[in-house]
Length: 481
Image (cartoon, rainbow, N blue to C red):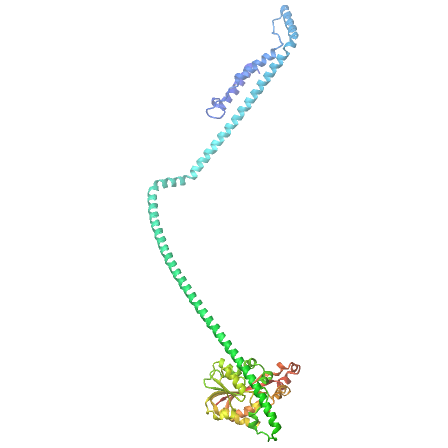
């Protein structure tokens, strides 16, 4: 390729480069690209000079010129040691210039790349901005609408706010009034509650004071009764000692007397302490009273007098008084009568046949007779049953309790302990006597199973225990028809 063609190719490349970057820009509008051609030309010229160091100019052929050329080459070789450092320096400077050109070319390419990316970023930003405008166009329109209608909306908002404030203030006022009213009611209720509690406390204190006083008086009454009972016991012992001494002296001085008849034997029991005897063999008063409370429940609803024949220590009368029943009793023992009266019970000393004979017919609402009929002679029992039936009102209740001869255990235990027992009365015989005098609705209830007080009986067959060792006592109940 000749020099002219090479120059034409170089010019075409330059034109194409300028077309790609119009106005010599690097892709950034308003910023022209630097022109490195003068620097390149200067570099080329410098390199030509560097390359010409140590060479001689060409001359036309001829002897003179040949000699001159040889002389120049000889002088150049002779000065080579002197200009060597300058040549190396010139080459180093040219290498530095070449490196600067390459670095500036790299910087131009980097700036072009940055400009391209900036242009791409601007394009993306503009696209996003267009997208955002398209997306937010309705919202912007709404904001514009809000801005246009803001005045009338503000006016409406202020009106509603004023109405709401008025309503809120009115509501607060009403709530404050209701709260004040409720506080007043709560204060009034609290005062009434405190007043009621004070009255309750005062009443409870008064009741407790009354209860303490009543308990104190009852304890005093109980102590008085116990003291009186102790005095009566001492007096009874003194009387028994006196009677024993008199009887001993009388028996020693008097001749033998004829045997007593039956009524005399009933009114003259053996000279022993019967109160201590009852405590030892019949049981404490509390135990006997608990057993007789079951009989008292059968007399519930009776408004007329209930007579206890042989009231003893008054256990039945006490239970009847607790149940609110009108009851009184008779007893031969003066000590028992005194004890009953000390308890505040209606009791008197009398013979049961004489007392019943004096009592008006059909005047009693009920008769209770416990542990008495076994003390009577057998021939007098029908007369007693006849008297009791005659004195009862129509519908009156008669209750008789006595040892059960159907239970063989009583003959081996307590029946013969009492020396005044004559013989036991079978329930079928007593039922017969009651039916004879016009009593009806008769019921027999076995009491105190022998197996409870005699565990050895549980080893016998159940049939034998039921037939021969049932209740130690029985109670028979009958109504006046």
